[in-house]
Image (cartoon, rainbow, N blue to C red; front, side):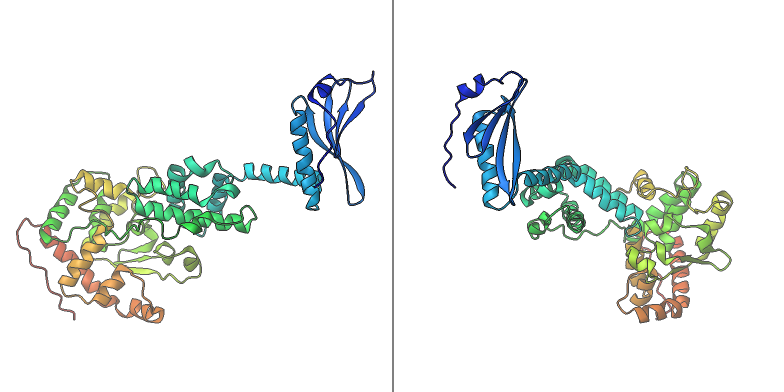
Length: 419
């Protein structure tokens, strides 16, 4: 680019005045002109683009000094060298900057979360939003999503790791990646910064949920449950949990329409079982049948006069809503069984361990636990063909739990007659 022959000086610019009511133009060279009006002084850059003469405003003096005006002129001429129109380029950049301010990470993440309704369970969306609010938004939420670099994302995730929450850090990296994939599809970002962080976070490892598998300790827990004083629905849920060993969400969202007390069968709809929302909508998650022992039926019959006139079996103190996800765990803590000893989900591990010791075949136990089977054809067959075995197992399991409630030592597991 040819060197500009500058003509103006700071003193000349400061002293410049209009000629009466007429404006004056003072050229500095290279297309830069100071337009002096009676009430203002404005910098212009005059240029030709695509055969047309155009004017590019560089601001007013003294806010924009002679030095700054020359820098603006040189930047504009550099754009012309790249065959870019300075005026159009500035308009485009202004729009981009405005969109960047509007499309912060939090704004885009919230849009993504709303799109997940119907794709993810409401509880999953709630947990994800809470984690984003607690861990991510305070650091990345107000930043334009287009401008966030991998190093900054890693710094935020390291803060989570430093608190020992390795699983949360790993899950947040995944969620950030999902938000960015949505942003890229909408043209709000060019790349996913979390993709560069694979392998850089500490492995969360696997941690089994706390569960009691010692018969004597289990007997102590069952006696504590029977002695627990709480609202009827909470007490019934606690008493039923070890008998049916469903997942906590499957238990607390039970509706009376799913339960046939006369037929002693509880059919949990596939839509409420574990699985992706897409699989549930496609009908690929089957209904789960839970044979009810005599003890389980008695618990439900006692509760029916209290909540049977409303949809939820285990209704919370707030009408029309099921028990909260923390009800069972909070009750266990109140009874002296903290999260390191026993949690609501632990009843599944308890039943699985002791039923194996009682001699029941793994296939029957796995079917009753509703663990996913790779062979879907075999799974469909087993769901119907082995219900008699599962019914016998559930009754024997309930009888065994009754024996554990009796305060005696060295309880020997009942051996199954079904092999």
